[in-house]
Length: 144
Image (tube, rainbow, N blue to C red; front, side):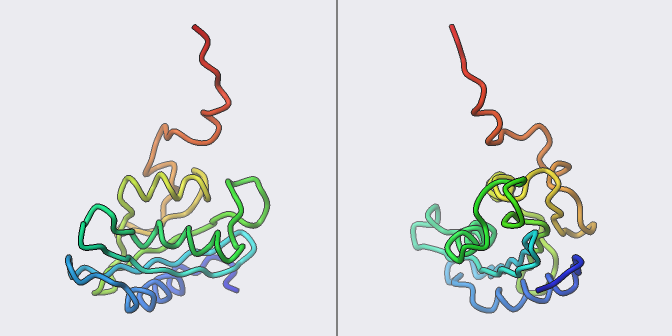
């Protein structure tokens, strides 16, 4: 358990996860580490595929690991089983900001207040993905 949020610990955990990446095509290993609302640490690495488009970013793998372990169970507000903070690192240990696809996936399990580490330091996901489409948008029903 890691509380309060210590991004140095998250960066180190992401760097360790990166060593387990499967990146034979891009040769760009990436690791991700997250802290849940209950203080559980989750890590994952990117997994590439020869078809390129089927590869998994470390952040998407991270969410899959969290759900599979029972550490994540849904969107923010669903209790302590949502993401509180995320750090992503490359092979040189530099902080990476998640791509658009990953930001959307992280939104589902961390919401706009999720703290996302990056080159400029931690920022709320809502700043990185303004006006995002999220689960609440599905509550609206279109009527002709």
